[in-house]
Amino acid sequence: MIDLLPSKIHYCYGEYQFIFDVIRPWYFAKDFPQMTDDVFDGREPTLLIIDDLMSETNQLVADIFTTISHHRNITVIYMTMYCTKINSPELSASMQIIWSYSKNPGDANQFAVLSQ
Image 1 (cartoon, rainbow, N blue to C red):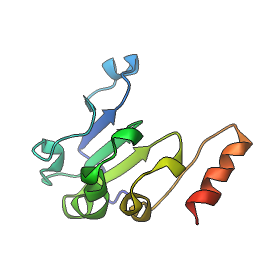
Image 2 (image 1 turned 90 degrees about the horizontal axis):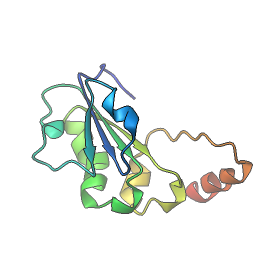
Image 3 (image 1 turned 180 degrees about the vertical axis):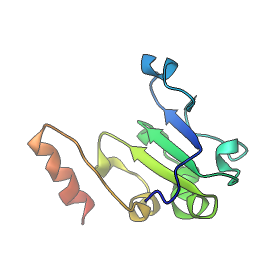
Image 4 (image 1 turned 45 degrees about the horizontal axis):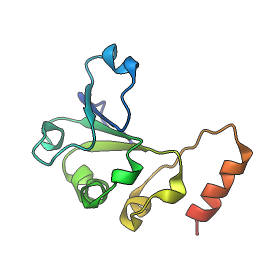
């Protein structure tokens, strides 16, 4: 849940899209941010969007969801094609809201697996 409107938006992506050139004042980065990046400074409300980086998910991402976001005023949106492929129990357990959009009714099976 977003309590305060973010003053910074960091969008981490796996695949570049031309729309990134016209969206401002967002900050775009290929791959995950490093701990030294200003996204983690905690001085102002920040929205961190992680898009299509499922295979790069590592301990830092788990830490972002479990401790870093709570202590540094960061709201995280994690976008992925297949929620059952989330390879971190900490990550899936720390998600507060899971939202899905799909035109394929067969994709509902992902949530049955995730809820187990």
